[in-house]
Length: 294
Image (cartoon, rainbow, N blue to C red):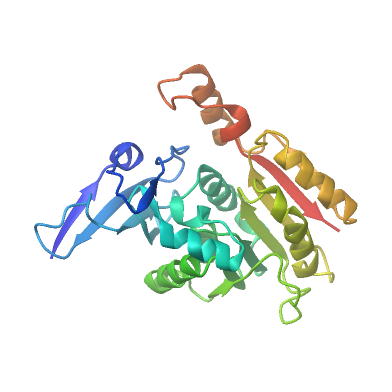
């Protein structure tokens, strides 16, 4: 069994061959806030990265302990048609399988910059994808409990695998995965349970807005202060329409464009230098911070 380590730039730019049974998609860029390397665990010397279906990505947190998180995720550049069959069956999207999105990285970095916000709190991440932010909260903030959820059963399998791969860094924090659909009518087991909800890039699909807002309203604790922290780009009028839904539900919100010095600095550098992130557009790439509460 061999191991290869790929640099971060390789991961962002790697291109893959499209097969006849798949639909092509392109790897995304990142803000480069949390260093990572791709560790390829190969079954034999002839198995190349281009043939592999997944890899283990090691994130090194910029904290005092340089905590390492190991996250298994897809590495092929295609969405298999079977993925879309599952999406249709569960009325979900497959974005959590595509990659770790830039908004997730920004959310994770924001959490690392605001550790006291999560200490001794019960936290749930919605639409978590591979779970970077939730795993970081569990590893670095001394939260009481972290639930990492998604509505896609394939994604939830990856979440549980990633929880198992990182149990040594969770300390006393209870961590679990959860299959959670935003249109799920019955949430009595976990309603009014969480001090903090976190989510990233979850407002793009307008058909999910109403269910997402109702899920937030149901899950937030009504005893003591509680809030939902969302990161996501405007993406046309998608975020605006989501906030209209929030307001109509009786919840309150604030929205901030400048919320963390380093994130803003990197955003400005992308705007001013196209070579750093080709075709970078604020509307589609820069996540705004939305905080929702009662």
